[in-house]
Length: 592
Image (cartoon, rainbow, N blue to C red):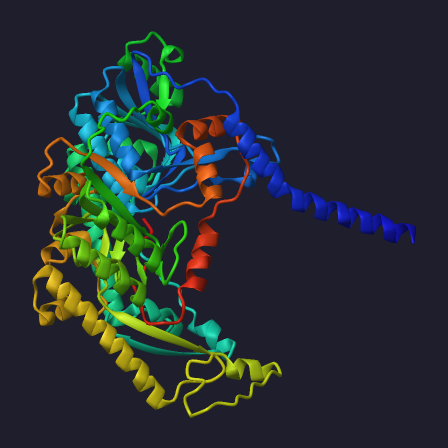
């Protein structure tokens, strides 16, 4: 009995601790954010540090917590920045006489969501470089993506014992048919589009010829962008840079230097001595370094104009109804679009799209509101990493569409997928019976397959949605339905190819889209940029006020524990997406 009570109370204590842990973390957040911290000061001869200590997203996000620091007591927090903040910070730094140089060193724990955001950051760095201020890059390890970004620097260095990855791109698709077969699960598919391959992982074990063709075209187009950028930055020929990857020639830091990919092999303290020299200081300890997140907290709004250019974010998977962080709710986003349309001070709107698609119905709801808005004021679409399928659906009403060269777009196609688990359940002794008013009362149930007539019914729904999709694109892009169908069929296009076939008008990021929207509204310099965000409840408003830019700086210094919400939001988007007709592209990420 004594052992029982010992075990019982130990378990009870564990439950209490686990229950109280979120509360303790929350208290830590609040107390840390309210604690006093010295304001960031940008001194003469400062160096702006871009080290990816922050996550970079399209739309505003709550800070990301990391529990990994709990055991050591460090309690680190990753700050989140938006592309708009990057634009404002790097533009300001280029004109700030106190900033003497920029240091690229990706030692932080943050991330950039995708290749197009990386491309936008790279272009912002090129503009900073055009101001005449030097950029120095140093890393112990260069991935292909980080090197593509760092190649803009005037001086690129690598640790003598570091590593350099330069081998080309690949896109990998995981297939689940074998697993479904083993579990006696059956999937029935209805779709329109030769290339609509989002369903392939469930019905086959490898890429179809059409899917392989589109994927190889997409990967090669993205690789050409990276190779040409690196070649131009390093004063090398594209052929030379491409062959170096195919031959795996850059197999060491020494090879990277010999082949002209980096300027030299240095240790970090040696690079810091170089930065001190550029900043006009005797030693690096005398240099005032300011991170990107810290520098943003020093910026003061300079425009208080009445006229506004508004940004509406469509960031994430598209679902019906209400959205959430990283999820586009059709009703939620439609309300934001409506608010922008009804605000007389908003003279133009930029729709920032970063979405692989999702619910076709939610896409239609947003399309309608965007079409009404476009009748009243200029609408410009800025495509981020993805603007495909449903993401392209909602982009079609815009007068002008700008994309990155590496944006994944198009995927004009739709599908429906029905999972049947009846046989699998029978194999483990579970049977299901049904009473229904007619032969099709339980159509779509997971306990039986669709009949041929029901499949025909579903196929008609898919064809109807596809026809509507094509007509919207044809109207918005001033093309014939036949021309749209020819480049549609569910095919995913890279930005460089999308421009050639008329799906986008030009290349450019959020900065260029905002300038174009202001130009179309004939605003000159007399406007300010606003973000139309979801209206907050009282608790969210309190948290966002506590976790303001200055508070987040204090939090990052004091440290806070927590868990990233990325995986949770990804799962939630699947659960909330429903079982209706989908307009979604098959890719989530290209591995580079």
